[in-house]
Amino acid sequence: MNEDIFLKVDNYISNLLGQEDKALTDTIASLDNENIPQMSVSANLGKFLQVLMISCNAKRVLELGTLGGYSTIWMARALPENGKLISLEIDKRYADVAKKNIENAGLAQKVDIRVGKALDILPDLIAQNDEPFDFIFIDADKPPYTEYFDYAIKLSRPGTLIVCDNVVREGKILDENSQDEKVRGVQRLNESLKENKNVTATIMQTVGSKEHDGMVIAVVNRID
Image (tube, rainbow, N blue to C red):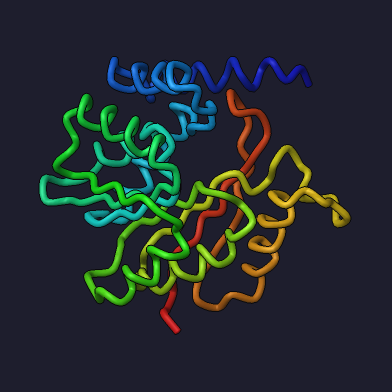
């Protein structure tokens, strides 16, 4: 099958149901202007995150990996008036760009961007013993994906949805001998889900403007 059809269908869906306004297109443009890699989710997947959030009545959201704030904007727009989104970003320059984009979208009051290593910040979030998150989106560096997921469960409640992006990597996960640390990181997460009794999970393949990839979609059953 001609792979161009995947892009055309993705664009069809995005134009029909995931239209980008100026705040979103400005966010994408800001990445090029600031020499930040274009690694944001597609518009179609941004809308998909919104649908998932609405399905679990998400009021508190945690995001790992802010980049320029594109996915952050999609998710923050699905929050109720009293909703809150905390986004973790290791790169201060990326976080500064994201803050401007989020302010431009009129969402600054709903979004709290915290700068630093997620593996340092996540234990602090647990120690604060605040309300659990209803929805968690993991789209950060891939080697510690399993550790991120384990922390996500501890910050959840039964019924919380956890989504992890980029876990198929154009099918490279099938290579058991891969030396790519990103591939090995998601392989480790994917394998761990098989025996993880705390969640009911699956992996959904995605194709389109972001080529061939996939997402883990997991609902928390219990917190051990």
